[in-house]
Length: 287
Image (cartoon, rainbow, N blue to C red; front, side):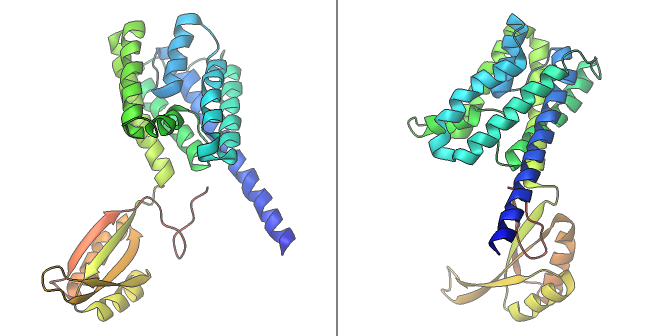
């Protein structure tokens, strides 16, 4: 049994590092063949590195590596050894692939096309790296460290830093390029969310009803999803209530509601977004 687990661990590790390579490559393609030729940047450390690259002509790949390394080491004790090693590997891959693509002709010189497709590719690459326990940008690591000592959340710190980056870009690259850069950052952030959370877009629902036995059986039989029964108590009448909890995909929302309301038209239903769903009939996300 020990050998089997060890072998599975190696396979998982190989797949994870392969995904890190693919993610770093996609990000490098986006930067070198879409953004740089059109004088467009992203936010965070990647954006800072691109601006310094425009000003000094110093290698972007080396800049990203140099600026990120202190944050990776600083975050070692808070995030862990595996995260730091994975991130360092991905950043080195980004630098290597970006350098290899330096003399390749850009895919487009249209700033709008470069913004859209560069943002999508960059977001997909960064998202793949994050999904596989790594990072290409130490901004959030710095935010985590500072939020422990300052009255700011990680999100607030990242937003503040990016306001500075894009304002700086406005002075260095002209304001029109800064606006394209903000759009690139927005598109990339949406692509990152899609990759990290997955495309299944799972939903979780809670149902409060007196017909819980029949509804639970119907959801299990007709929707094909497991149903969990939770104990609850009404806040007004202080009566014991059975609460049903079920997870399904976005495409099954209409069927779910029709099953519940067909049995009990007065049932109270809440449907919530879920970031991930594991086990059962849902595929496990890669960590």
